[in-house]
Length: 168
Image (cartoon, rainbow, N blue to C red; front, side, top):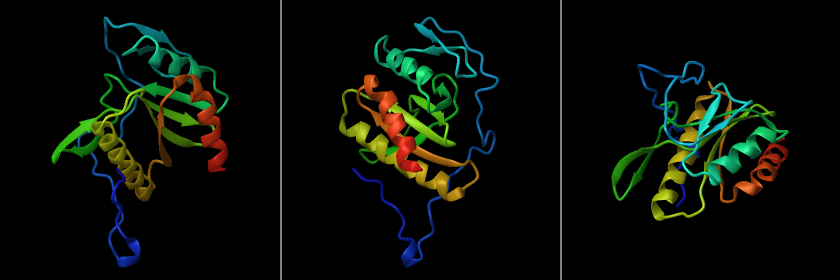
């Protein structure tokens, strides 16, 4: 499922983000919440603990993000209300929160989704994420953004290195 993009050659307006008027730009600097779920300590995040939905997938992704030479910092997009991406599935509007927001050493903000099994609904979320990235990049007020689906967290470090190298 590919995101439908405006045809700028035909004069269609490029996609632009629709901001939350009460909190147009989010930050993880002042987050404080409690959880009973398993957590993983961090060094490269403003939030000292990452909440894990699964003990293996998110834990492995955190481990790879913490040790990657191309990651400046990251945040697990959980309980934060930082980034909700709109998408449509079965003609109904939804919003989803991707797993991680990662700032790479080349100044690219990367939305990372960790996913082992994909459904049609997941593909609709990815299309929404691609549209969101396109809109934010067209707006050009928050730097460059990209979206990546990691299907094997053991490969995340290599995938991030490839993303940085291919964007230079």
